[in-house]
Image 1 (tube, rainbow, N blue to C red):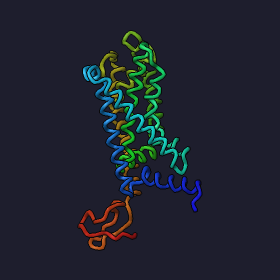
Image 2 (image 1 turned 180 degrees about the horizontal axis):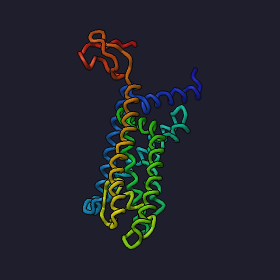
Image 3 (image 1 turned 60 degrees about the vertical axis):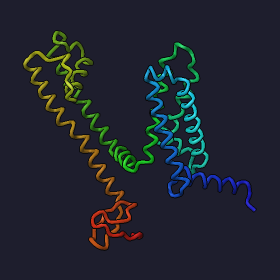
Image 4 (image 1 turned 180 degrees about the vertical axis):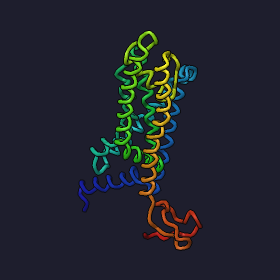
Length: 277
């Protein structure tokens, strides 16, 4: 006879298969229903920022928003309950996103005064984090996320190096141009350097001396060179990640390898692939 602990373990296993898995029909229905709720809740956040819609349907939007908040809260609690490692899930990217998707609604309850209207609006806008919940259902999104995490250290070093270049160029421009040409301080020069090196070029501060203009031209050319670096880093990581997600099955007809993990047929000749590696 099954004990109470065994029954609870069986319940957690079934919930885990439905909530975290997609192999069962119930799991697929759960994911589809949750995606519909996410999209609808985000649309409500958008519509609530339109003044006419808010004035006419404000009460209905509040009710719908709280319905979605309760649904996502129950989902978050169930994920913690049935997860094999609840703390690891809570600290993971998706766990934090799930928490951020419901937290603003409850935080808004602590700012009921009219003086905190702006704060409440900001908290409501943070509900847009719910759109990130869709990432777990997109294999391409997960691939991009993994590539970004793999390249994070390289990108950090790149931005740190760019920051050093910005500081050096800013100091030089401050010395060359001076306050009378708009470079009134090094922070102001840093602003100009960032605007120039990113090829935005607002034109509110411009160098007037020939040497300053020469440095500006160099900074613009440097900006074009710099833009390509993080793109190349991320592209390389995405290529490596794609290579890792490909399986090693070889088509018996055209001998091609490198198919998608869930592919049933060869994308080159259409022949059926073997199920075993």
